[in-house]
Image (cartoon, rainbow, N blue to C red; front, side, top):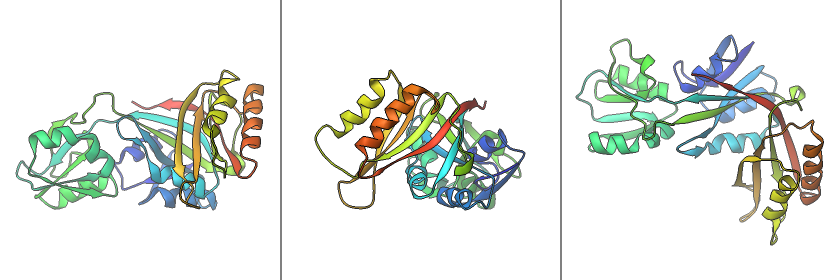
Length: 267
């Protein structure tokens, strides 16, 4: 089976995708990955959804609203950032915006004069460092080859740094079996107690929410939708009851069931 993920080779997305499929190809944007899965152009996609330091990946959240796909697995991998360069004399640090943010304290302390440049991926930043001695990249230490050396390891601001990825598939492959589930709720309404009603739909059935986050719907100012992850399968009667409440709350909008799945931890 083949999956498409953020490229080029050597990204953390590549490491996550390689843990669940045999063949991996690459695109430069999360939106492109989700679209290619939704259109049936590829069997699987692997996208980052949340980092333990920087929070949710908003492009992924918005793409999951724009295109209908199923979540079939959650992949959790620790993030070990290293500073990679041809030598100590560099002027620019290039990496994905999330990686730069995750190493903010280290860079401010040790390289306050370096210019930070956000690029499409950690691996792209490492490529720039390989091509240009004035550039350093941030990436996994395994990417130190072909002229690059590791100047420092584990430079992330917190040792607990980890990223969640979703393995996505066409909606026809959605499963209701698994330990966790994800839904998106668009109430298309705004009134006092709306969020409380959504929370009570799960609390009344003793369903633990592992994440709930709002995003602008894009339809009008002040109009929001909610991404909800919870510890229960869609097949469970308590989940069906909770989602029936959500369907009523969102009767002017919609509730999208992305599927149930299990978690894979990648060391």
